[in-house]
Image 1: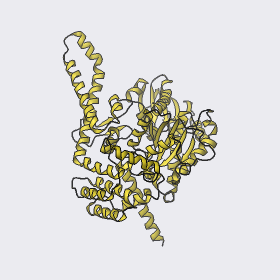
Image 2: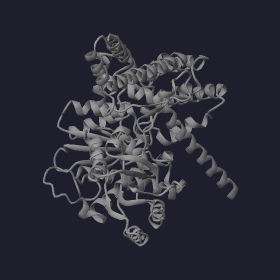
Image 3: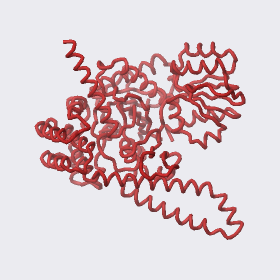
Image 4: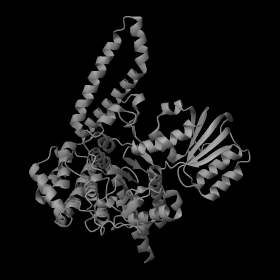
Length: 570
């Protein structure tokens, strides 16, 4: 309940303390933050009868409604509010901002409130999307900027950094803590975000973050997605991660409109651990166990459905009517999970993902270049393997063997290019230039460090329970090093003089460039083990392989434009 609970607490305080019929005014960002945290039925219970975007064109006047505005404090939103206040449609305005409000913005709102309809102005720091108790995102537009060399687009990169700092600050303000800050040494953007966050928390808003707590300060660690490009390229085999990889999840919602034979009421479904008990229990289960659990749920529902058909008395009828809402909810839940499972099974079969994924896992987890080369060649020649899956295989091979066997990497790139109509082979080189061995800080393949080599050897002797889920993200190693006090200062320096004194009880790891649901699952499992350190994971977006490759495409395109511009200048 950590992150979700913090956001829900803010939203409940906005709505619960205000009696009477209400309208919610939201912007593009806060509509997502709100929808992730509260369901429509919960909003109705809080007497919210209308939800509008703040930039919508004016409609009829409704002075009987009280407007609750929950907005990011941007210049654009301030101008929209100014328009609302100049000609108010609602009887009262209660203004809540998700981050720091500038004095100049307060003055603009005060000048616009000539009708004196504004009742309160507050900052409620719910400036992030709390997807799960230990996982948050910022849904940063143009996420590729996070992996772009700053020189290519300095203005937009700075805007991305500012948004990341604001989101991180909101997380710590909602926790009522101020952290010691560390960052990944090899990442320019991680250093920039860490320094800007420290400046905000220890200088610009020092009083706001001064919670005067005596215990060990929490740790904020800023890392770069480019240090582990393998995790977002892999197929996934646990429920939540698999849905995102094959179908896509946005703000805990799955869009099924374009799938064949999907009923109208299932064209968009919600997957929330707060609102769906089955999903909460099974979101981290593997594909095989998930199928068995869905069958069990269907069997239980069918038993209940049969008992509902046996209505023989007035008492039975009253009981049925009382339980009907729960029955309908369960029916919808069964249909939702069966539909998702059916569609994922179809895609797995259609794209030969069992074979593809086995080779991916071998590339990620075990050395053996000749066998890996043959396995990838075989799949490149398989007509049933989708083009994106071929590209991912070549990328994973290139990341693993760029130093050991560069000639074989070139051969695979050429083979892929000969059969690809969608993707350019230069994408593989772009990946290596951004995320290759020379750029990385961590021990991605566990072959640099003595501890990691010993761990891999032990795992090899022990074997793996499931060949499809043997991969461990680099983040697992990072968390272990934090817990054991082995995170090296030379690789992850502190910002300023605010050092860690003792082992932190709370750690927030922010991945610039995006998290994955595989990493979120690993963090949840670590926290369930209760080793004395609680980890929260955040990122600029939540990636799957398609979105990660799209970011690479955008960077590849921008670099080509830059080269063309230089050639013209010459």
